[in-house]
Length: 383
Image (cartoon, rainbow, N blue to C red; front, side, top):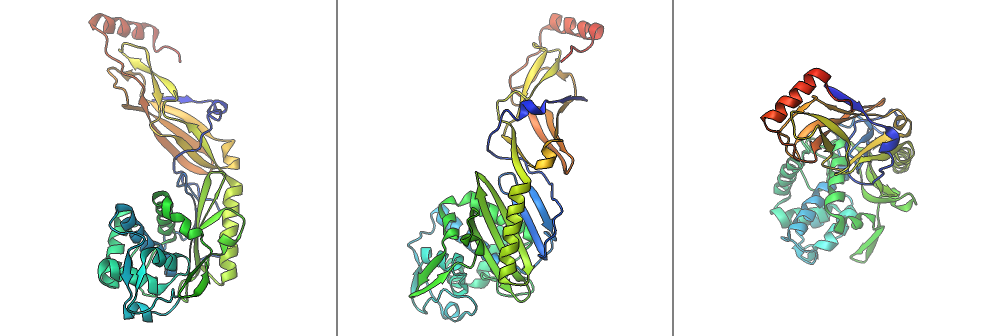
């Protein structure tokens, strides 16, 4: 096994701002939240977590899945913002937070989205559920099925609103993953989460997300509260092209919910950074070749390599190229033949495939014999 250490100074001369290698590097920070997670959206790295995989009552934060179902219909063209959906008596009578839709009327999808996102309207959720699936129960089944397709293996939905139900459950990690999916997939609709107020039926209501009223780059996503869940929030903020997603739940008050979400975001931006290593096409190293038309083959990455590190860990980062040397010819361009390994003190090692940048053919019989004799006599050439 051949291992080549790379010069860190050289690596950081190639700074870019792209996707992404997820590094599990959760750090210890105290939080009064019962469940919490802080994710770097660009790389997927987890900066901190607490009970992040424990099933919990998500309350209205689960409305993010309701909204996702609508966004996907809008994206595939089967639904339009100006389409209208009927208001049933069940939707009109639903308690809790309301958009104040009127029974036996029709409401535009665009208004319903704002009723859910800005006003957290339970009535709006039921209008959407019945309009898209016939009943709220059928819609909840569809929500759960779609969650599985998105990789949310623990989330189970029993209604469209987050109304208390012992089987209506999500985890902080899956809420963060869902938020990431929404931000990445629906940029044309994401700005709705940043709207601070919405008026319907001559009733103006403000967005319950306290982060939106701070000058910290926050622009979403959703709050939640029931007696069982406590006070929760899924938030996101972007600064200088870097975005973080925070989920907190189980807090004791509106004030604590806002303060804790903001504190974790500030900590994440302050203590961590994203560092770009290589672009596709950059020659990471030249690997030795056995019995080839050339002695070496240049190696590169297929995707941009960006990692999230604590400011302290960056100073101790070790980057290696690992492969079984020499690599036997023939070698086809684009074939994975080595690995880039990134090691830091506070994170698990990250491995990224390295591929050949060109074809290396096998020489004729005479050439192979000559190379073999040289290898036996002189050994591998120095790199």
